[in-house]
Image 1 (cartoon, rainbow, N blue to C red):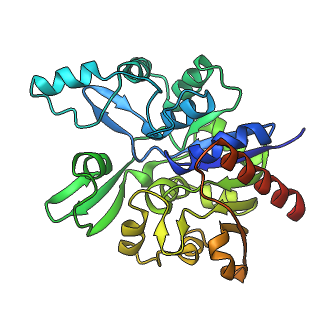
Image 2: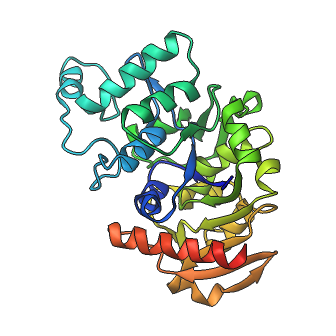
Image 3: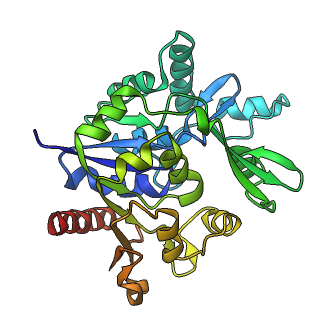
Length: 308
């Protein structure tokens, strides 16, 4: 049986890569960070999972890289007018997905089962899987107290100082048996997309035994850092807080013990070579449009074919 490729994904950088991967690779499945998930307005919101599903179904808003294209926000606006603090911008059509998810979870289905159902409703052939079924969330410790990641990033716009970052509930997390079987027995290659190493990828690899399972795979990562700056988001601030250098070399340190290849931007070509057992290669990694995503995906495929 031809084995699948596993992609580890957060909610922004990696979906941009998936935009191209879907045209280059025949078969892959995606394990998605759920530490950004939040309960809000009585609904279970899974932003990273939804971004992956919307991207693979060609429905994502590629201007914002979250939510559904051409969605409206009438419900959110009315709630705010009524004084209800729904600080996340939840679109009207997007909200329907959260309602279905919450309803199915309350009926006793696992998050994995619910996510597979939703992906099938969108016509996806690729499995989209949460990193675990247990409740895990990223807590950002700030001078005003501990905040859920979404509060820190959306409500306070990421402007507060960060004292520490904690993964609440991670010790109880484990792969769903279906996901575990795919990763262990039907996967030779793992692609880590250009997502935030600390709050998007670290939660996934912190789930019980995931590091152990992927250490036997061929692991390729695309750097979310170009030079000394993250492509987007608070990755730089978070990496400094956790003691990592804000650079592609810092990314290697985060993924130590299992990374085989790190693809950096051509502007970081000087880093090419072998560092701590990791081969560093360069390519244009900044994704501004579909062509960029496809070209980078083609390059990733060539690297995999060359080294395996």
